[in-house]
Amino acid sequence: MRIAGLLLFLATVPGAAQAPYFAPAHVPDGVAVLPLPPAPGSPEDNADRALFQATRTLMGSPRWRMATDDVTNAPLDRYACAMGMRLDAARAPALAALLDRIGTGDMVGPIKDHYRKARPYLGTDAPICEPRTDHLARNGDYPSGHAANGWLEALVLVQLLPDRATALLTRGRAYGESRVICGVHSRSAVQAGWLAGSAMFAMLQTSPAYHRDLAAAARELARLRTHAPVPDRAACAREAELVGTGPGR
Image 1 (cartoon, one colour):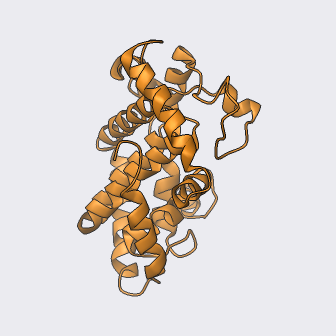
Image 2 (image 1 turned 30 degrees about the vertical axis):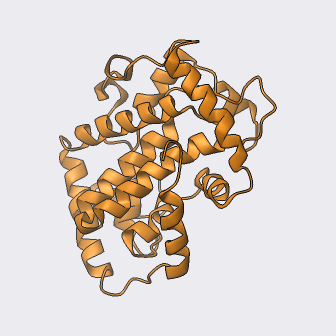
C-alpha cells in the first residue's frame, strides 16, 4: 500500500520523472513504419532545399519569433490558446504528468540514428532560430522529434477536449512547421515526425496505464474548465493568424 501510494504521489508531482508507457522493445520499429527520407538530388529533396531557402526570408518576422519560442516552450503554454485555458503543473498536475509521460523518443531516436540525415542548415551560413550547437548538428534531421512530440500532444489533448479539436490540431501542425521555419528540419522530416506521433498515439490506446492517467486528467479538466484563467484574447488572435500561415500554405 505504501509503495502504491508513493507511485500515485510521484505521478502527480510537478517535475517528477515519469517512466514511459512502453519499454523500448515494445515501441514500433520506426525504420519499417516510416517512408524513406528523400534521396539526395530527388525532386522531394530539391523541394526541401528550396523551402529551406525560401523560409530564411522569414527571419525577424512574427512567425519566426513564434518558431523561436516553439524551440523550448512547454506543452501547457504552447497549447493554452488552443485549449482556451492557462494551466501549469501546479494547477493541473494530472494533465502535466500525462503530457510528461507520453513521448516519441524511443521511436524517433533509432530512426535518426539509422539514417543520420544532415539538417538543412549544415554547410550553409543561413540563419536559423536556435543556437548552432554540436548536439543539434549531430542529432539527425529525419524525422523531427519536435514535430512527433507536438503532434502526439495535440492528439492526446483532443481526446480530453474534443470540442477544441480544430484549434488543438491546427496548433500541433503549426508546431511542426515551426521547425521548417526555424531552419533546423526539412519539410519531409516534419511530415515523418507527424506520422511517428500518430503511430505512438495508436500505441497509447492499447495501454491500460495510459487510459487511467487519461481519465484522471479528464476529471481534472472538467473541474478546471469552470474557473481556470483564460489566455489573453489579443495574443490568441495573433497566434490564430500565425498558425494559418506556414510552409506551403
